[in-house]
Each structure stands twice: as C-alpha cells, then as structure tokens.
Image 1 (cartoon, rainbow, N blue to C red):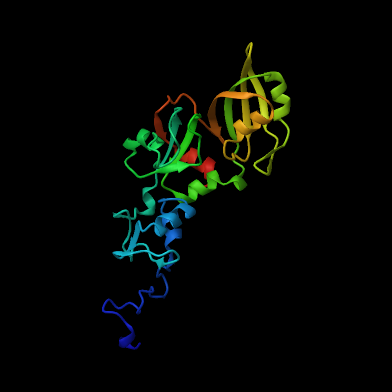
Image 2: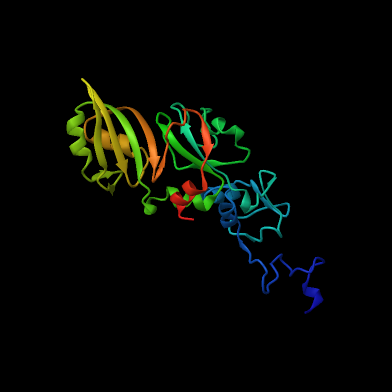
Length: 259
C-alpha cells in the first residue's frame, strides 16, 4: 500500500473507514443518531443542519458518514451514548404540558416531569397540550419509530368526556372518516357513562393522527371536554398517578416493538 495515500493514524486520506473482515462500516450521521436513540431520523437531520452535531471536533454535514466508536460524535457537546444505555419509560401526562423537548413559546413541556430519569429521552408521538394520559419517552430511535409510525397499526385507546348526544355519537364515530384529506379506519367506540348533557366514551383508533379524536368528534357535532389516553397496544396506563412516570418492563417493551 502506498504510504503517501495514508494519514499519520494509518487511515485513508479523507477519513474513510478501513475495510476488512470485522471492521465497522461507515454510516450516515443521521442514521447513527437515530440508532443510538438521540432522535428520530428526521429530527436527527434537523440537529445536523442546525450545527448541533460534531464529528471529530468538526461540525457535521448532512449526509456525512462516520463510524461510532472510532469517530468522536457529539451532540450539543455531549458524547454519543452507547446503544446499550437505552431507557424506556411511560408517563401519565397531565393537561397543560406540551409534548415536545423544548417550546419556543415558553410553555411547560413534559421534559420537566421526567428530570429524574437520568438520561436524555424524548417523547414517542404526541398528546396535545390539553390532553392527558399515557405517553412514552425513550432514547431508542428504532423503538420510537416502531411504536409511532401509523403503518405499524398500534391501537391507541382514549376516554373522552363529551358534551352532546353521547348515544348518537357512538354510531357516528364507528364509521370511517375523512380527516385532513386522509380516510381513517372505523374506530372502536363504546359508551362508558351517560350524563344529562353528554357522557364519557371509550374510543380506540388505529392511526393516531394529529388531534384525531377531537377532529372526529367535531365532525359528529360533539365537543370534547377532556381527553385521556389509557393504552397503546397492550400497554395500559393503569394506576400510575398524573405527573408520575415509571420504567417499562422487558415484556412491555417487547409487546410494543416485537423485540
């Protein structure tokens, strides 16, 4: 091999990884960040574009390749966490918190409720500011994609306290509907309680689109007074108190992502 084409550290000019049996292959930086649970692939791209990611002390570029363990990858100045340090928690989100890592408008975020986790996690999917209930947080990007992507058909169940004709709403909500130019599947709906001016419905949806329950109810002429997510797939909120969180068990993790 011509030594003039090698660096002082015995790496090819340009920083490409050495090839050979057992040698790790370079991967795109946004894929590495997602696989290590920093963020989803799309959010990882935004981190790179905003200059918050460095590789070997230099600002990373979108599409750049690197090798974890060989290249020093940092996000906001913190070294990339090894894959083995994944964290999976469930939070009973109270109303009044936005489901984001940070909020430009200064509103309270769910991150303030999980400060004791001991790892940098982020929400899996969303609950709007006024909704409450089961919310997952993790630093495992593959797990987050498996749970949140609509194609994986993870059923989500909610309890909705409504004003309006509760009995009539049950029949209307059981039909497929057009939401934001998309046809959503028929929901599973049952009447839990009837009151003088409304009642409480249990609604299970498949897609989990943005504000789907509220939009469905609005199309049926009923108003949602409160909305609480009680389960995702086989995982149930149970007796977890509002504002509290707990780690998922290995069985619960497997039930959500199949691994």
